[in-house]
Length: 546
Ligand code: BG6
Image (cartoon, rainbow, N blue to C red; front, top):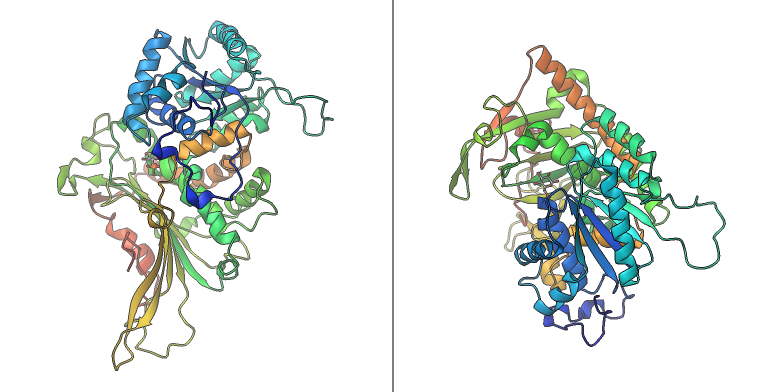
């Protein structure tokens, strides 16, 4: 069993010394004792993300003293062999490496493995028995989190089996009188992405899982919401009085949201062929970032209040006009090129990719949010693989000064841009024009910057750490609700339908770009084409500070 935080046996190391910047702040909440079952424990996600996140939480003393992990998968593996695999995974992928040997041996004592089939009720009945034994031995009270890190085709059947084996009883209705004594144990289910592949499949999955679970038990993961900088968007907007008044169509000219990656499909060709960038990055991550950026201030920072506001943004996305589709949607695929001086193959040459594939590895969109706040403000979203560098950022372009006293239009004055860098080099920068020293009124762009690294001196935790912790605490603010997922699929599926129609009558348009470039030329005209010459409007290509 793990020692409680602060006990003499908990190894203290310099890396877990208290952060002086947090002094005087409220203590972190520690979840109730619980067991987490990971379905798909043999997979990549469990190795690269989940176990390393659980280890880091333990190391930061954020998990309860009594906590157990049960890996569930098809392979026959002993508890000890599974622990060894997980040790190797944490040594390779945990945020702080190498792992601490003393801490690991305490942590590993509560890791177990259960062999089973996802479609087989008997496997779930034996899991129930096993959980009962573990809980009795460790003095746990029956709180359970089930993590679905399986292929999406198994989501519905795992949840059905959890229900049939009575492993995930629904909580009492929120209106029920609270019984005296401790609350009943909880059963929560974390569901990985992708949640459906279009509106119909997402709806069907929601229907299936609601047959067993109450929405309050469901935690749909979008790991972007666990990123510190994405959460900071809300703080930036609502904890500072000066930004909210300018966060609207009176001051904002347009907004660019970029999710660029330099990696290719990394051996996931089979999956990516079915997904494409639109499903892989836009439907979930970028639309979630957009909705946090654009939402109205919620009444409180609780899960439903925040998600109600995000939902309104997703519902207000204007359907892309049929007649002007190509000015609003660009899709493209990378060909061979080079990244950082290294030659890389084109998408069609990647393993498990068809040599005539028409799957997009890049997508750029121009969209509008039909609301009072954002009427008339274009939002540009782009995401792609094999772009020159990894960068996720939001760039807010402000309108020009109404009357220009200096210089000729566009010659030396650039629009003010606020760049919120989500990753890497997390931070925020604001650029503005400043007088160049000297006798003339020449203007140069300069910038003010905040960088997480230098301001706080700590590395941000991994998104999965925050999300697992929130689920254990019963806080679903950073998880997507059924109606949000359906609203974003409603919008995205219209685009997929249009692509399917075009493919059916041989009008498909798929641009290409060499790996290592910022996408096809058509994406430049999407922004620049619509702007007056010399307006300074261009994609921000990870070039800040200017
Ligand atoms: C995943 C996608 O959801 O997000 C991947 O499936 C993508 O294709 C990844 O590479 C990007 O996440 P991050 O955290 O590296 O920006």
